[in-house]
Length: 411
Image (cartoon, rainbow, N blue to C red; front, side):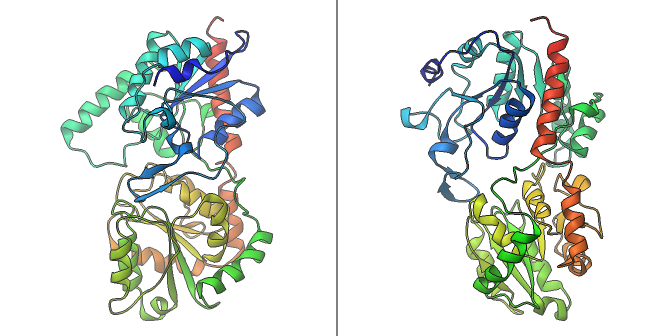
C-alpha cells in the first residue's frame, strides 16, 4: 500500500543518496547495500515493494513457508511500499510500484540502482525512475544462457534490453556471462564497475578450524563413515535444479565408486518424495535428507561434504550455493546451465563442469571430481577462487559506478 512509505522518517536533503529498488529484502543483497553505506560512505535507501521475506512467506519451489533468520534491514535505510501486516503483497508476483514515485521524491536520491527487469515490478520501477529524471545503475543477473528461447523471443528480448541499457547511466556486470551478454548487445562495461554476485560469509564458519570441529560430528550424526564420499546438493528439490539427475548420475558410476557415495539433500520441494522412492531402487543409493536449513546451520553440512553438485537444467542465472560451497573449501560439479561456472569452476582444481540435462555427462564429471575430495590443497584452491567474489568487491563496484555517474551529474 502506498501509504506505508509515507510513514518513514524524512531524510536530510544534504546527503547524496543511492536508492536501491527491489521487490523485497533479499538475504544475498542486503549485506551489499550495508557495505556500500558503511565502507564507502554513500547513504543507501532501499525501497522495497513488500516486506514478505521478513514477515515470512511461502516459496513456490521449496514448497514451504519460512522467513530468513539473518538481519536484512540494518546498516542502511529500508522503506516499504507495502507490508504484509497491512494487507500488502505476499510474493514477488503480487508486488507493485504503487507509491514509488512519492517514495523517490522523499528519498531525494542522486541515482537509482536497478537489480533487473523481471518481474514487472522492476521494469515499472525503471520507468518511474526515468520519469523522475534520475540516473539508473543496472546490476542484474541478466545473461544469455539461463533460458531456452525461440528466434522471435530472442529478437524481442534483445530489442527490449537494448532500449533499456541505452537509458542506463552505468551497467554493472556480476560475472563473465553477464559481461558477455552486455557486449553481445553492443554495450561494454567498466572493469571498475565489476560487482560480483556474492554471498555474505558472516553467517557461516568457513575456515579449517571450523571444518575440524564440525566435520566429524556432523558425519557421525548423518551415519556417514570416514571412507564414504558425501555428495551434497543444497537447494530447491525441483525439476529445474536437477537433483533427480544427480541421483541417476550416482547410479551410473562404476560400482566401486557408487558403493562409497552417499547423497546429502539439503532443502525441500516437489521432488522430495520421488527422489527418496527412486533412491531405493536397485542398485540402491544411500540418501540423507535433512530438509531446509537456515544459513547459520549450513556450515556443518558443507564441511561434512566431500563434493558439492548443482546440476541445474535451466534458469540458473548464477547459483550462489556454489559460492557457499567454495567458501567452505568444497569443490563443486555444476552443469553448463549454472551461470557462475566460467567464473568459479576451474576443472581439476575447484570442480568440474558438465553438459546440462544429462545424467551420463554428470556421472562422468562426478568420476573426474571424486579424486579432488578431501584434499587440503583443493580446499585452499577453492577458497582462493572466492577472493574476488565477496561482498566487499560487490560494494566497491557499485560505489565506483555511483561516484562516476554522480560526478558527471550536477547536484
